[in-house]
Length: 240
Image (cartoon, rainbow, N blue to C red; front, side):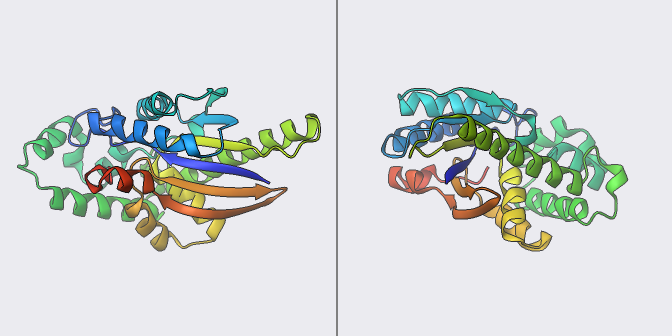
C-alpha cells in the first residue's frame, strides 16, 4: 500500500496579469502546511507541476517542514488548465487578459461578475461542443492528468519491485493545482462533469487530497483537507 498526497498550491496572484506567482499569504500557507507535516509520515518522493506557483509552494513547504528533502521530479502533466485560453474562447474581451486583470484588481470589474464569467467559461469548455477552439480540450486535460498519475504509480511500483522487501510505505507528495486534483478525483470516484465542477470550486489553497493505491486499485482516503489552515486561523483559508 502506498499513499499519494495531492497538494494544491498556495494562494496565487489573483487579479494580476501574471497569476502564476504566490501571494505573501500563499507562501505563508505553504509554510504552515510544511510545519503541520512534521507530524505526518515523511515524504519518500516529491513530484510537482512545473508552473511557478507549484515550485514556490514546494519551496515554502520545505521551509516550514525543515525535514529531509527527498528527490523531486517536475512533471508538466500536473499543470493546471489554461484559464486564460478558456476565458478568451468564451468572450473576446478576455483576450486582453492584462487589462481585465487590472480591472479586477481595481474592483471596477466585480469579483461576482468575474466568478459568473469564469463559471460559464468552464461550462462551455467542459461541454466538449467547442473542443477545436481550445489549445487543450477538457478531454485532453483529463487524460493528461490521469496519465501523469499513472506515471507516478508505475514508478512507485517499479521502485518497490526492485527494492529489498520492507514494511516501509511509500509516501508521495504531488504539488499541483485544483483543476488537476479535480480531474483525478473524477476518475477515481467516477463522478460526472457537473459534479466535479462543483468539487473544483471547493478545493482550498494548500489543501491535501490523499489517495491510497495498491497494485491497480486506487481509492480516496480523504479530500480537500485544510485542517492546517483552520488551526492557524480561518483567515488563512482561501479558494484561489
